[in-house]
Amino acid sequence: NNSDTSKAPPRRRRINMIENRNTNNISTSEDSGTADRPSQRLLRPTPVQDVVAFTEASDAFLQTLIKALQPMELYNEVFEVTVSNPKEQWELNIHLKPGDGIYKLSIDLESNSLLFSSPISGSYTYVLCASTGEFVGEDDGHSLIGLLVRDL
Image (cartoon, helix red, strand yellow):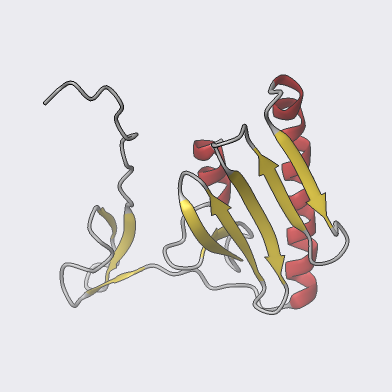
């Protein structure tokens, strides 16, 4: 029946990076997160364990993000950015128009991670990758910056 004109937005598929242990090639798989063969495994980042290095990187990321969001806030009257405790266990909130939700990004110093919640993509935990210096998803290595660009 085509009388219902309201449709849910299309869902994005999660693409997981998979490493083949036999050939050391990296390929992508559009599956539910399980490897096709026992010789394949998901690539997981090696997180930075040093609290000082993590804190410095997360604080720098927060400042860069605030600077990048300022123009969006100026040109969107329903877009409000707030930061609580910018010098400690900070939390950044992006408030959208009523009904569209709130984006939340906070630091968790106990686990050296950033916690992100999006009304579009859901919740993820990010770590500072030791090899790239970028904040990436702890489960599959996807980029926090990439997700923010797609969602916002």
